[in-house]
Image 1 (cartoon, one colour):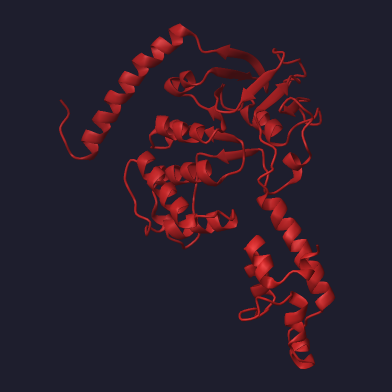
Image 2 (tube, helix red, strand yellow; image 1 turned 135 degrees about the vertical axis):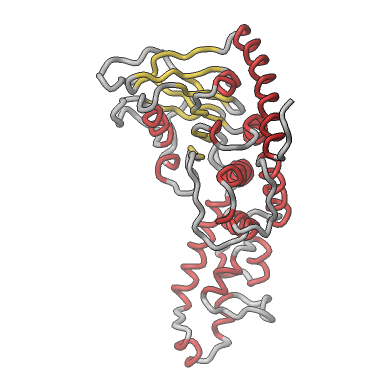
Length: 330
């Protein structure tokens, strides 16, 4: 049945987001919810219809189109991404890359290591644009071991990769609560108030210094901004792949940040020079001269070294906090 034949009450019960469509088109439906859109328009006299510039036929078409677009945006039937598989291309010299394939699985951390300018961005770009031998590296990327749907390349709402870069500067004059609420509303989250509360709590768990929901986002420190965006990405981003660039410089609890993202079943790609973070992943991809030089599985010996590094990290964090609070070191 066409939406045009349903009453406003029936439509709003099925599509609550239609309130914004009706308000944007200056349709006063209050008290007439038992009528169809056309019946409400017909209650207006000719002058009122002309003043509102309403063409009922066009309005009904716009209504159906709006429902189709919003339903597609909010669809729970989106294809779930279990894996990303990358097949080799060439490095900057045109030489073949030295691996057969690289499969990234949901809930996995894969670290990317290599000197500055070695080609980490090229690898990310290929994943983000779902390369099909049509980028400078000639790599090919599969989603769930299949030729990917074009939506991963061209849809605004279904981006494959969400990036958390080193530098984040807010320019909007909003409080933390207003900023996160705005993002939650754009995602059509059902329980916005609770989601916003959880995001702010999670961000404070990651940040060195706490902030309140009323703190202006332009007043957040670099670490607090990164913490807020990691928590926001974990709960609101629909992107299955998260790339974090040099989280070691973020001034946040790095281990908790990764645990938060993995709890949301993301594939986490971590570009890092920090040995502790590099060993947290199951594998690390070594980039040289624009290409993947090797893929190293984290060995048992390296995990033992990781345990030693975590002890040192904990001690360093204790000393840092002591200095921060004006104490003498012992």
